[in-house]
Each structure stands twice: as C-alpha cells, then as structure tokens.
Amino acid sequence: MNGSVEAIQIGRLTLAFVPVVVVLVMLWHWRLGAGNALYALGRMLAQLVLIGYLLTFIFAAESPPVVLAVLAVMLGASGWIALQPLARRSATLYLHALGAIAAGGVVTLGLVTQGVLGAEPWYAPRVVIPLAGMIFANSMTAVSLAGERYFAELDNGKIPDVARRIAFQAALIPQINALLAVGLVSLPGMMTGQILSGVSPLVAVRYQIMVMAMIFGSAGIAAACFLAWQGRAARS
Image (tube, rainbow, N blue to C red):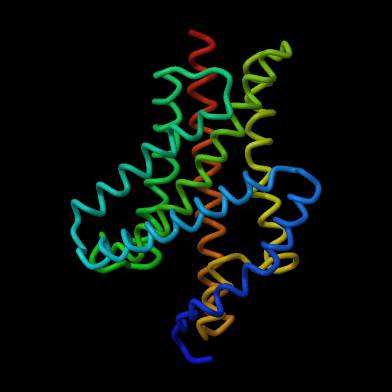
C-alpha cells in the first residue's frame, strides 16, 4: 500500500453491507424492528454523501468566513444536542452547555491546530473542521453525561457540591476508559486511517496521542465549566 488512500470502488464497497444484510434479516425474522434499522442505514448513507459533497466545497473554498460559519453551526448544534438527554431544559441551560463546550473546545482547538500542528493558514479547513468535530462531539457528550448525572443526584437528595463531584467523575468515564483501552483493546479511527494510508505506525502514534490528549482535555474542561455554573446557579 502506498502513502495515499486508495478510493474504494462502489462494487467493493457494497461487500461491506453483507453483514448488514444478515443483521437486517435477523431483525426481520425476530420481529425486532428491521424497518427502523433500515431507515437508520438509509439516513446514514444520505448524511455521509451530503457531508462529503459539502466538505468538498468547503475545502475548495478555503475561506475564513466559511470555516468560521461551519464551526459556529457545529458549536451551536452541539450545545443543543447536549441537552437532549436532560429532563430539564431552558435557554439558560442551553447557554451554559454552549459556553462550556466553547470553553473546552475552542481553546483546545486553537492550541492543537496552531500550537501542535502549526496549520497554515490558520483556518485550513482540512485540519480545523475534522478536529473541531472530534473535540465538539466529545465535549458535548461530557456535558450531557455531567448534566444528566448532576440533576439525578440532586433529585436523590445530594447537596450540589457532592452531586457535582459525582457528575464530573461520571462524565469522564468514557474518556478514561478510552485512555486505558487505546493501543491495548482498540486502534482509534485516526490512527487506523493513517496506517491504512501507508503512514508509519510511529508517526500515526504521535497524532493519536495528540487526539487523545485534546479529547480528554476538552471534555474535562467542558464538563467542569458546565457543573461549576450549575453549582453557582443552585447557590444563588
């Protein structure tokens, strides 16, 4: 395999759906909602094809306003999605979630793209947008877990300070598990993709270390900010 990723032919790509068809048949045979799974698969295909064309346009444009607009949409959507698992929702809570994700995500994104990678230009869409997606998504999940656990602990009679500690620990479980498992149980997406494209495993490891550090840091900061603001609101 050479140093670039080879395009997968459509005919060969369809072979990846052989196990999918097996699962769909099992769902249909056991009457477990094959229609929902089929809808999810169709939606996945449509969304990925659409984002493929959209990213092609964005990468070709290389325009700072376009990149900043995309980041703003990603950030706004992540704040909204973060609240979906919570029973309590309000405009203030959305602003807290949005601010927490921004506090953890934007700072980390700038540090990684400019300090670690030295992206040129600073708005390089091929660098900024994929990394922003990883950072915002993991920060969003951390805020969701923190908020859900925090309010559950309050409902169970815990005082805010105790609820905050429990919620912060719970929010970091996925990230800590990922740190423990990487290289031993799993080879994460970025490292796998680079190895498949022919990059030296030693180089791929450096990029993966960067990714794991930025995800853990941004998620932890986002969860901490969100919980700190909830604690302040509870005392006011």
